[in-house]
Length: 420
Image (cartoon, rainbow, N blue to C red; front, top):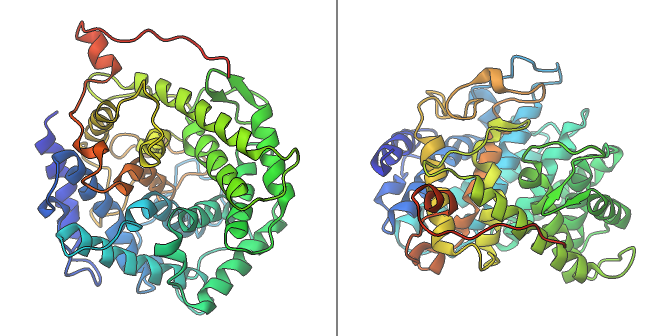
C-alpha cells in the first residue's frame, strides 16, 4: 500500500473539514513542511479533530454530529456519545496542542484548533450551552471524564491555564460530582483515579483512596511479561493499551510530582516498575505489526483502531522507548499501521465523522457500549505528534520493524520473558 494512497485518503477529508463551520481558514496538513510520515499523521489528526472541534466551539456539535450506535447498543442514553467524542479526541491530540506556536502552516493550524478546543471546554460545562455534556445520570460519564481530564493533565499550559475562572470552577464541580459513581473492579478503577490525580495536580482536594486503591488493584492483576488482567480473569485484548498502562503511569507520575499520600509511601518505585512493564508490553505490540502494517484483531473494543498502539506513542513522546525499540523503527512501524487502517474507505462518514469499524465501516464489530463517539479514542495513536518535527523521533533514519526483518530473512533479536 503506497504512502500516496494514505495521504490521498486522509487529505480529502482534511480539505473537506476546512469548509465546515468556522474553519474556513483551514490549512490542509499536507501543505505543512516536514517528513512524509509526520505530515500524514498531521493530516489524520486534522481530519479527526476539525469536524468535531469546529462545531463544538460554536455549540453546534450535538446538532450536527452524525450519530451511529452499535447494532447491539444496550439502550443507555445516546447523549453519552458527545462526552465520549470530545473527551477521547482531546486526550489524544493534547500533546500536539501543547507544542509552542510558530508562524508556519502547522503552527497556524495548531493555534486554530487549540482555540476551538478551549471554546469546546467552555461549552462542555456550561449548562446554558446547547453542547453542555451529559455529566449526570449514567456511569459512562466516569469513563470519558477521565479522558477529558487526562488531556488537561497532558497539556495544562495549553488547555487548562487559559480557561476563564467560571469554566475552571464548573469543570472542577462536574469532576467531583462523579465521585457518586462506584467503579466496577475492572479498568474503570483507573478512570476514577485519573480524575483524582488531575484534581491533585491543580491543587484541589483529591481522594487518595480512589488513586491508591486503583494502583494497588492494577498491580495485583499483573500476570507477568508485561501483561495486566482487566479484572479477576485474563482476557486477551488491548485494554493494556487503551487504559491500563497509560493511565497507571500518568496517575503515578502525579503522585510522585505532587507528593500525594500513598498507602505504602513508595510511588517512585511503582512508577519505575510501571514504565518498565509498559516498555515490555510495547515490545510485544511492536512484534504484533506485520510487514504490511496489519496486527491481530483480538479482543473487545477492536473498533478503537490505532489506539491499540497508545503505549508506543506515549513512550515515544516521553522519550522513554527502550533500547530494543529504536525511534526510527517504531516510527516506521506505526506509519505502516496507520496506512493499513486509515487508507481504507469508510473510516469516516460523508460529513467527516468517524464510523464504527476496525478497518473501514464495520458496524457489526461494535460492542454493546459502542457508538461512533467512542471511536475518537483512536486519536491516542497520534501521541508522538507531541514531539516537534525537529525531534530525533521524526528525523532518525527509518528502520525495518521486527516482523519485516523476520519475514525478509534479516537478522532480528530473539524474545524472552521478563521477571519484573
